[in-house]
Image (cartoon, rainbow, N blue to C red; front, side):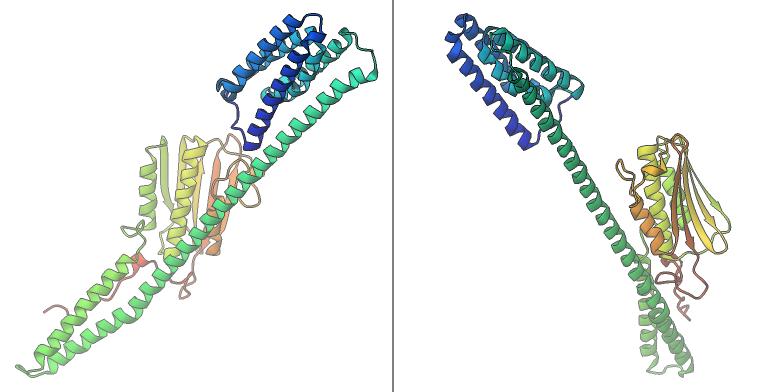
Amino acid sequence: MNVPRLSPVVAVLRRCLYALLAGLLVLAAVRAGDSGHPRAVVLSVLVTGAVLAAGAVGPAVHRSRRTAALWVAALSASWLVLVTLSPDGLWVAFPLYFLQLHLLPVRWSLPAVALTAGAAIASFVAHGAPLTPGAFIGPLLGAAVAVATVLGYEALYRESERRRELIEELVATRAELAEAERTAGTLAERERLAHEIHDTLAQGLSSIQLLLRAAQRLLPAGSPAAPHLEQARSTAQDNLAEARRFVHALTPPDLEHGSLAGALERLCRSAAVDTPKVRFSVSGPPAGLPTPYEVALLRIAQSALGNTLRHAHADRVEITLSFMDTSVALDVVDDGAGFTPGDVRPDGDRADGGFGLPAMRSRAESLGGTFTVESVPGQGTAVAVTLPLPVAGVPAGTGSAGLGRLRLPDAVGSRP
């Protein structure tokens, strides 16, 4: 198991602990003459210092929990030898508390700190110090301060990381919603332009062709105006064809080669590479839908199916497009892992890392529809969106028909 990446503050504090430990070891070596075994004390200091240097300089301690635990155990053992030989080794216990708490899991660090404090108290008494409350309170108070400091900092750091992740997720969701709004606005403007071209420019060009054709029939044979009328009619016909190409270019790419049902069927076929079975079906007689409806339903299907392939580990996925009397519905149902609805926050994302639900809900609600997600752990997930069909003669969004269904009038009298 890897040790979590250190924050800059923790890295500086760790170096300070190493420096403090080294300084206290030097103090014990300088005062070795006051003990009954000066050479043994100096040798013990050198061994403890070597163990400390090996862990402080070696990268393995900073990468592996197991290596860090072994290093702390070796450092503690060498310190026990030192504190047995010299009372000055007692002070090393205080930075040792912090290292144990920082490098060991909580279930190991707390017992290690308790044993270190007990060893410090025993050493204090064994070296002939008077048995006073201070002999017990000092090491215990130091251990309590170390535990409160380290565990409190770790709790604050975890809370800070959780808030940072939440802010990043909210920023990403806002960007996704803004992109969805821009896309919806672009599609709406495209459809408005297409209908304006269809209802004004194209109709006007057709009328011009009709009038020019009638004028040609009224002219006597060989009239000098005939070539000019023919040129005018040809120009109007060319401009009508150009308008037709312009309207075709405004069609969304995913829908320009067929209907919404066809786009969904192609989506299911492409997704079948990643999951054993993806099935698409249509219920009810298909009806023409405005472009914003088709785009919203297709994007929701793509997002929901993408979530299923990434997270659900499903064996079967069913996408159903249902045409009803007053509404159109899209259902994406899988038999995957599912989740608990209570884990979904008010913003529509799961608490453990969002599935892009706000963007799907925004698409549906922007068209006056409803968006629901139903799921049970171990029993799959169902995503359902229902959009009300536009009333006849009343534009839906900004238009009453999809761009792919606009038919410009044929050129009147275009046949020679």
